[in-house]
Length: 275
Image 1 (tube, rainbow, N blue to C red):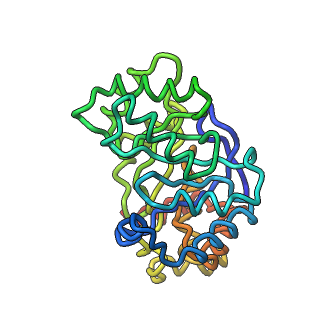
Image 2 (cartoon, rainbow, N blue to C red):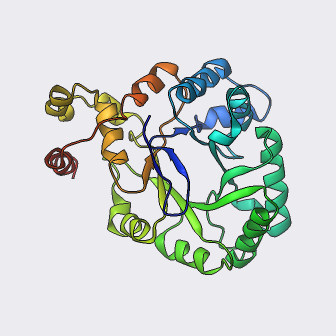
């Protein structure tokens, strides 16, 4: 698994990561201690780790932080890049710091590499939230600050509310099927040196099933449609796809999306096909 710089201020991380959002039913059942397919999901994460993926994303909402803790327990923590997210109802100072501590307990870690605000909350001043984020950095519990599901104006407001640090990453939906962020947020992040974590990189699995549009590329590169779709994202400056880690077989496939490049002409053709 090849690595690249996580924004202009972050470390080198695997160019493809692993996401641990499963589905709404998983979230609901996890609240009462029912973890469907737990062992398979843990093995999927381990498969990625063994293959060189060190970027893992979770959130307090997902109910998957304990799975991440279990999966990474046999690996060197210092070589991993773990991100988690705080829910918008926890964006006041005390609530945020408490939510962070709870996430760290579930992850069995002393710190997270990246802490993201999961969604903006207009009822809580962004200045209070970002001061709390900087306090978490000062306490050594967070290394980098991020945002998820913010629009461009909200990203700029959050950056302006910081005094000692800056935003290292934003997390948004991005795939060949959903390219809305190319209008403003993607060029902004690339200009400002902010990493972009692309969730739903396979369009909720639809790209992995749509073989017809990928046929000429499959023949040329000897890769699956999912690998080509992930490669299209990973080829982009500061973009890190984070496909879901739920099945070891799929993770093996994702690992083979690394270590090669799409020709520039093929990149343009793919974008035309999916425009």
